View 1 (cartoon, rainbow, N blue to C red):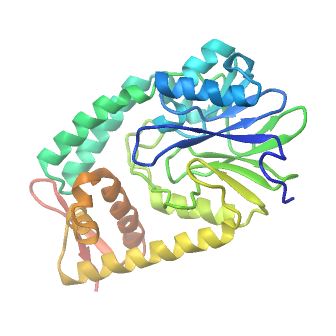
View 2 (view 1 turned 135 degrees about the vertical axis):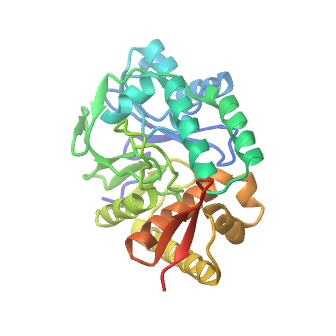
Length: 328
């Protein structure tokens, strides 16, 4: 316990993304097989940055024996197919995500339709929906299809010559989040499950079971955080920013933040019923326009919990728009 990531043979490769979140951390596990956890987005610029980062550790793309995709977001998986083709590495990801990754364009198109319908139902204006749909189509190229050759499930193990990593499914930020635990060294490669400088937004998404139904992101994420809080960890290696040394303190901070936001939503709805978009605008102002789907996801996560607690109910008007009503 307590060893640093480099001492444990795990190296951060910080790659550019071009997204608001900033650079992405990919983690090189210098063991047999040589393993890369996450790849950065699908871009020649990012590929060159990755090649330079590998060279700093005396490695090449062709040396990779294993690639692990932590979750379904394009800043973490975009280059996986290119790297696998060049190296012959096995590709590991959450098993139910494998069909989604194999049919990237079709999956993203279905995700966009889902998002557009969800935004319409919850009061986001048509012009905002149109702009976001157009942006999503442009950004789709940052990802690419990849064939998963080693599907992973909760409780699986990834063996190496010098360690064994335990696979845990920690959904919430997305339906497919995996974290990799090295219990001997007290390390957790956590990707976007837990990030120090920003909250890991539980984003609205389709379930991976093909039903087309919305995944209960925030409720699931809080359960996942509770499970991670119980782990004995020295360091969490994150998908963005610096590693987390005190995971329990940060998780408690996240819990408190979600409680505060739920309280604000309850107070707003005590004044009058509102759509999720109206709530987002009241909470974040113009950010609810520029980051409409992100803020909608946050609000819907809380309304899910508040409905389950019996504090809210939903009403849908003749146009199919939902408003949340306080239950006194």
